[in-house]
Each structure stands twice: as structure tokens, then as C-alpha cells.
Image 1 (cartoon, rainbow, N blue to C red):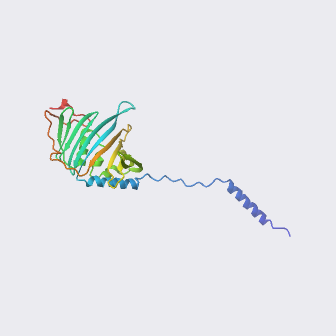
Image 2: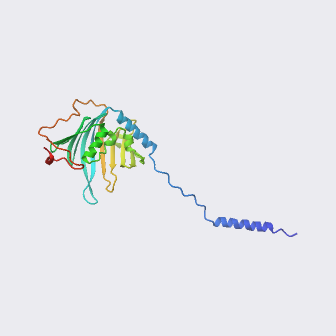
Image 3: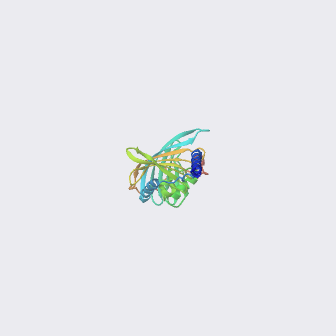
Length: 265
């Protein structure tokens, strides 16, 4: 009895399907967008601990050094160095002194007025100002036309100022600054690119900050912090300004212009 042709055709069809399957391109996985960059939880936790340490101190003092890039012609920059000190008492007392390649200044704020002294030229200017330390420093930035990378550390909420909406951040690694173990973090956000080195301890005190301004030039400022004292004993008169002998008084000039003797009186 002849065999039925059905099994033959079934086998042929099965072989053809197997051949087609072997020759076909593999199925493509659906294309998905990469996950959005975020502020890592580890970074957020460290910055919050730092903010708690700084804002919990009724007063503090610190010394610091600076290295700042400044434009020096098309496509070039130079490094300007400086050193300074800060004394702060919350909510509205501040003294700072800075000496650098481009001048030497001291600043006083007592909750009622802000005073700047050009110590090289012995010229000072005073303007009424009220509010907390953050408000005063924002006023200084506006008056003098400068950016103060130290401002977030003196703000009412350092965490909020360092991490506005859209900020991303990650842990870079661990290193040592002056025999202290630190964690190195990098932040990118609307205000620029920040790197911050925090003590690898519950206090998370900042020992170094690097700030790159937004914009085409992307100039960098580096602050090195030393001698943090979160329980200082401040002498009376720390935040009171007394004009030096023979000092000339001047008005604050428009934003970004220096205080010079030609405007003194």
C-alpha cells in the first residue's frame, strides 16, 4: 500500500520553516531611552549631613585659600591666588577678610549695614542692609558684581542651594586632604559644576570646593578650607566696623566696578 504523501509535505514544510527561521534576522529589542541622570542617594545623604552640621552651629570660624581662573586673552586664562578668613554668627553677623593677587578686602555685616574696606588703598564704603547672612551675601554679590562660591556653605539651607531642581550628582571616590579621609562628590546643575570634598565622618565638614561657572569660558575657582571651629568664643566687637586711621570713605560703584581712591572723599 503506497504511503500517504501528507507526512512528506509536512516534513518539507517543517524543514522550510526551520530554514527560513535560521536565515531571518534576529528580532530587535525595543529601543528605550537611557534612564535620566539623578542625584545619587549617597550624595544627597552626605550633603544633608554637611548642611545639618553647618546650620546647627550658632557661630563658626574658618580659614581658607583660593585659586581662581581669570580670563587673560582669547582662549587663555591665568590663576589668581588668595587666602582669607570668615567669622559668622547666625542669623545676621558676618566678618570676612580676603587677600589676593587682585587686592585685599575686609567685609563687615552687623544686621543693619554692610561695609567693605579696600585695605591696600585704605578706602571703605558702607551701605544699609538688613536680613540674614545669606541675604547679605547675595547683596554683596549684586553690589560688587562677583560670584561667591562660599555662599552655599553660609546659606540658610546649604543643601537646597547646592541642589536646585535639575541637579545631578555622584560619588567620585575617596582621597586624603591634610591627613583627613574625605569623600569626593561631583554635582552638575543650573548654577554650574560643583565638586566638593567632605570629611568621611558623620559631620561631613567640607574641606575643599571646586566651582566651574556656567557659560562659554567655564572658569574654575577652588577653595581649600582649614581650621573649622564650630564653637568659637568671639570677642565683643567682632562684627563692628571702625574706620582705620586716615581711611577715606567712598560710595559703592556700579556692579562689577572696583572701589578706588578716585571715588573716595
